[in-house]
Every structure is written in C-alpha cells, then in structure tokens.
Length: 75
Image 1 (cartoon, rainbow, N blue to C red):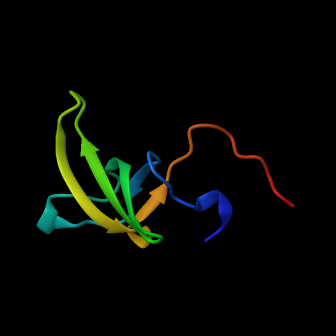
Image 2 (spheres, helix red, strand yellow):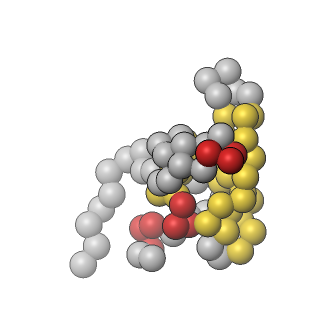
Image 3 (cartoon, rainbow, N blue to C red):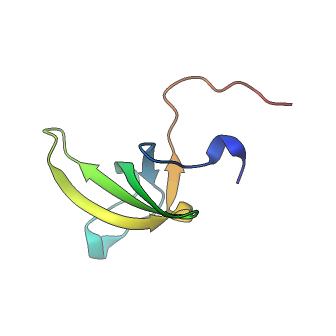
C-alpha cells in the first residue's frame, strides 16, 4: 500500500464490495472510528440525518480511501 493510501483514524472510506449479510453495499461511505490492527478498521456508516446504521470491522481490501482535495504527485 502506498503512503497516500494509508488509512487512519477519522478517514472517509467507501466500500469496494457488497456485504449483504450486513446490509452494506459497494459505494456506501463511512468513517474509520477505530484502528484495530494495521489492516483492520472499525467503520461507522451514518445516514443523511447523522444516525448510525452500521458499525463494522472491515479490512483495507474491502475499502477505498476517499480524498477531499487534490493530491500532490510524488517522485
């Protein structure tokens, strides 16, 4: 994983896969609220009113880090 893609506490992430057993689907956006291990995160999913609808432990292969500003190219 590249440095720019390292996930950390309070990062915004999106699901890369469907997890129907948890009623979570690709593209849903959440926030990392706990780093359990270097590759495992507790992610909170909140609706538009701010109510939590899911709180699940997921690994980095299930998530993509979202960026809210341009990234600088590194050499």
